[in-house]
Image (tube, rainbow, N blue to C red):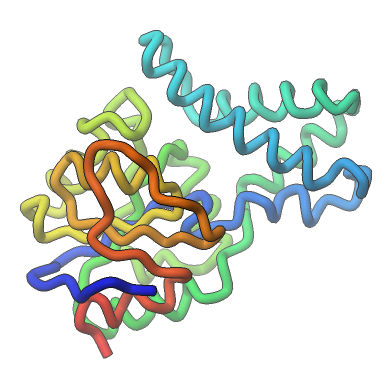
Length: 229
């Protein structure tokens, strides 16, 4: 599915949730969730989580991603008629250590061995990202873990993507940004980063400013696109 190789890349920056970490794994690993409601709960939770980041950014009423994630879960549970505070706490705790996608570790290891700098740029709070990274055992493979909290606004605001260029001391065109979220991929491209869209779910192309430089079905294809065998 990859469209072309990207030259001149010195750093590869990954989105976290949905790209490296499977946000569906929190619900999937929680036995207390009614099976007939599990898929809908996970879907609504994620949908509202993203919507609330965009809406809060437009309102100028920022709260961190932990708060937003809890608010979104409250909405999802209420919409499905689930009233269980113990279950809510269990799901929030599971969100701290989401499962790494199967191919993510190998891709990060290949980038590291190939001498390419790697980082995360995420809506998550520093504490959330630290828990996820440590839980997955990928901290040694990362040069930086960047949170939107340093910008005070959520993706796809340009100031978020600027965190990557500033922290890595690289020009935008020297950074490859990888995200499974199409809107995030377009946002990074509009800022000036080179972008690979990890289209895990076979979605159609968005009609937005910016465009991915390449499209892949999974992270295993990333090293080859960046010239790492």
